[in-house]
Image (cartoon, rainbow, N blue to C red):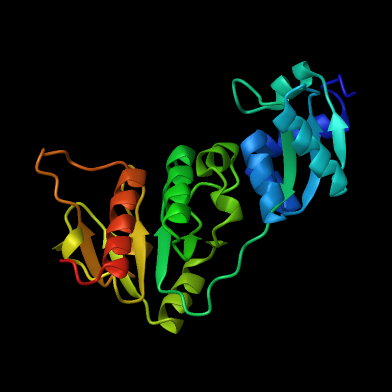
Length: 262
């Protein structure tokens, strides 16, 4: 059992939790908790290392046993060690270091989301969770958006990382993708020109959701063909980025699954 915070594996995980550059250089990220660990197993993503605290809980015991069967390098640790390296207030007794990888973009994407300049990890994670629930075909993240493998993004995403193509692209790559697939680009903007339920989301499209404070960046705005807004009769200036994304994504679902309903 690992009981020292000076253990090299413990120090490595602490660095991964706090340093985006370290995560991306090594191509790994940290997953905490039983539910997300189960998502990792279901998805078949490769696991570099697992730490666990022994428990009589049957669900956790089964999870640890299955990880062992798959040949995962597992280390038993003390509860004090897990608490020290965990990003949650109440650790669930298991933590995995998982390889970063991206699911492939569909051959002909027609329902794509671009999340630009969103810097709040909870917002990005919530957007990813919503996109996965709605079967969005891909999420694109330009350089200014918060690290998708941040511990808070991973927790808020609730497994979306393992079910959703998430592509970190440059603006030049994004522009080429739009042109190659003939995507109509909609920008969500409070001062838009067309109400969100009047926009045509039945065509192949890319939807841009901008950041919490200043909205979309100039580079994102330059890509837009149409600007859509969500009417707010209560007089509120703007909505949370994750809330806006959810409204627009599910309006697109409504149109694409029930196109005859106005």
